[in-house]
Image 1: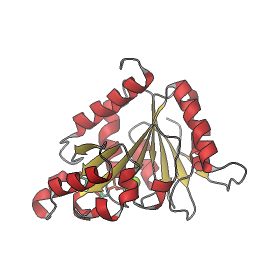
Image 2 (image 1 turned 45 degrees about the vertical axis):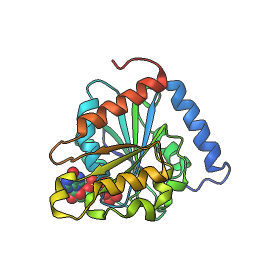
Image 3 (image 1 turned 135 degrees about the horizontal axis):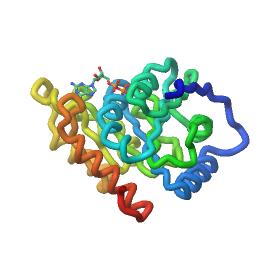
Image 4 (image 1 turned 180 degrees about the vertical axis):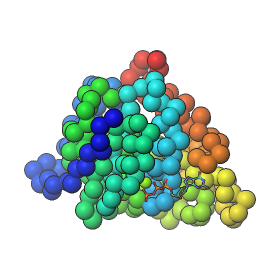
Length: 227
Ligand SMILES: Nc1nc2c(ncn2[C@@H]2O[C@H](COP(=O)(O)OP(=O)(O)OP(=O)(O)O)[C@@H](O)[C@H]2O)c(=O)[nH]1
Ligand SMILES: [Mg+2]
């Protein structure tokens, strides 16, 4: 297994984020690479959700991960330990990923034109990443039980722009005053089409439904059955 590659992004001033995102999306769609953008506050469980998800996909699909962080390769090391090709994108202070950064990360993947799934873990932040299209096919917002059940209404942009909400760390429900119904109601008031999942990476609860959803959306999009 090759080592983790690290991309320190350069400023890109020639094309707008929208232009780059649109060209990436066209390319990924042509290659049938299903791209998933995960966004949430720091510590909501993005990397842990990937660690629980990827073992269900990696033997049947070609999978790669782009890890966005301000600093360090810690998340990339965790994914790389699963035997999955990973590129760490360090933004050097920028609180979100932009399409040109993702393009630079994707370009160094060994098998970039032959991926079935590409997961992008955005920088931990529930505000800024929501405003940047990365050309993804699916945007997923995570909300963990310890963060509190009032967050969808307080941070609506992330929830409005996503197609799926994953409520994480549900094994902690007995210890927090977290009203699942309230979260679902508020999130659906902001984005009525949200698909909502309740998962615990710790116990494995809900992971299979989440994985089945990812496979189904990919198959529907590219109009061919899962292998
Ligand atoms: N109890 C419990 N803890 C969890 C679960 N998922 C994640 N955690 C813990 O939450 C902490 C943060 O998880 P990460 O996956 O690193 O969170 P992240 O969203 O990737 O964080 P950033 O990349 O820094 O934004 C870790 O200590 C995890 O072990 C879960 O389902 N249950
Ligand atoms: Mg992480």
